[in-house]
Amino acid sequence: MNKLLMVKYASEIFLKGLNKNKFEKILKNNIKAALKGIEFDFVFDSGRWFIKTEDLEEAVERVKNVFGVAEVCIVTEIENDFEVIKSLALLEVNESAKSTFKIETNRANKTFPINSMDVNREVGAYVLNNNKDVTVDVHNPGCLVNIEIRNKTYVYGKRIRGVNGMPYKTNGQTLLMLSGGIDSPVAGYMMARRGVEVSGVYFHSAPYTSERAKDKVKDLAKILTKYIGRMTLYVVPFTDIQMQIIEKCREDELTIIMRRFMMSIACRIADDKGMHSVATGESIGQVASQTMQGLVVSNDCADRPVFRPLISMDKIDIMDISRKIGTYETSILPYEDCCTIFVPKHPKTKPILEQIRKAESVLDKEKLINDAVENTEVIEIVND
Ligand code: ATP
Ligand code: MG
Image 1 (cartoon, rainbow, N blue to C red):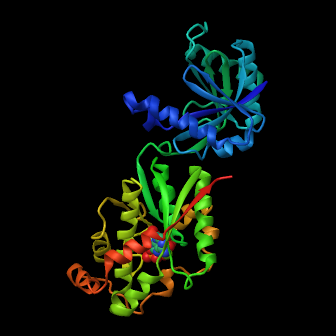
Image 2: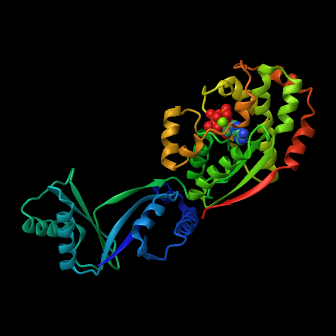
């Protein structure tokens, strides 16, 4: 008997009306891309998607993590033969070693002569007759046997939850401020999961931050490409800007002014590359620069929406996601980022916009930004 992977996609895609086909097509291509290196056939049967491959386990792992996939099931494919259906259902119940079961049938193929209610009843009776240790429980079955009757029949028990979300690259573009920390890779993942195409920008302060700090950011971007295929990373030289700020501004205003520069530069790059928005890993109240007042003052430099998907999350929950997506172990490696080196002892937690604008007016902001953008390194990171 042939085992295949059945893919169900997120219910939100069904709601797309006339655009549904476009979403389906992108999702299908994303699934195919995720299976790179595995031999497979993509099979359609009456609106359902199936993947035929020798490498089922690996395919399950990859496909369940494709954004837009709601569920994957390993199904057994058989001809539309009622005797075979019955014995396979019995086998599923026996192998589950559960004491209760339920049969659930979906008959998309109306030429099959028995309707789904009767299939449920007759298959159920057959299982009860051949296994005296089980009973039917329609509300909370230990083993749910699904029977889908299409051009072929597909029988399956176990269902594996997918990541859901929206197909990647169906919801515009964002430039993620990607540092080496725990938060920003999670923020990038969450944006990508909603279908937003993600590029990264990293502000690098050589030689105060080592080449290894930059490598760490590249490693994090690489882990994200497991979910998004590829990512462009912009590495912005940030040392001159920081030195100027340190030289000319008050110590307690360093961080907030620095963050304003980051925001301005991110927006400039986003604009140059036609990206709609910027994203960060900020969470309200987490550190001094992430107070409401701090966010207001740095947001003042943005000329487009700034998305902060972690804004209301606790660190502990962010850490859980980072472990799940595989960035945590890299994020906690102890290479310093520019913020930890240039941190003032007592940063302002309630900066006032007018004061900060005035404070930074001693800098030639336009020139500093232009120089940084002009010398930005562009790195293409690809999943392999
Ligand atoms: P993370 O864990 O993502 O580093 P954090 O808790 O260290 O975040 P901050 O250092 O205040 O917090 O940074 C807040 C956000 O600003 C980060 O999530 C990231 O989006 C952005 N950011 C900070 N430093 C950099 C940098 N060097 N390059 C790019 N983005 C940065
Ligand atoms: Mg950080």
